[in-house]
Length: 129
Image 1 (cartoon, rainbow, N blue to C red):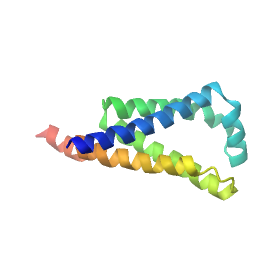
Image 2 (image 1 turned 90 degrees about the vertical axis):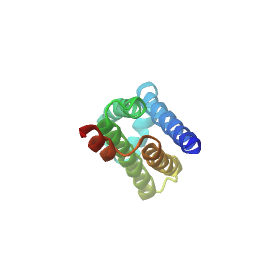
Image 3 (image 1 turned 120 degrees about the vertical axis):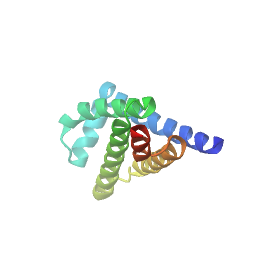
Image 4 (image 1 turned 60 degrees about the vertical axis):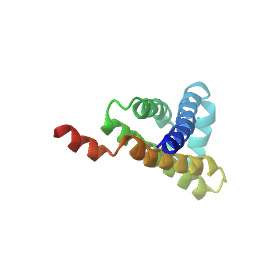
């Protein structure tokens, strides 16, 4: 059990750092993501909402106040990095590596979250009994 917790907290820490840093960069270094969004063909109005959602997603995962919000945050993070990965591959700028690393870390965090804390459906059925 201790090994699973170490794996979970390591992956979740890396994932949290990546998304908090990304969200803060969107706020404080707007020109950097602005240029990337234009190159990738995404609307730049998405930058600030994504920054807020990245930070709130980390909060939802770490606080575990709502299993639904935690699962929604994991799904949102995975869709975010999957879209970034595909977009970077399609334009051929070879900056897809951070998205690939994020996909792996998100997957590990999600899998070990279930091993350490139990699955969402198990918690629902357990609380109804």
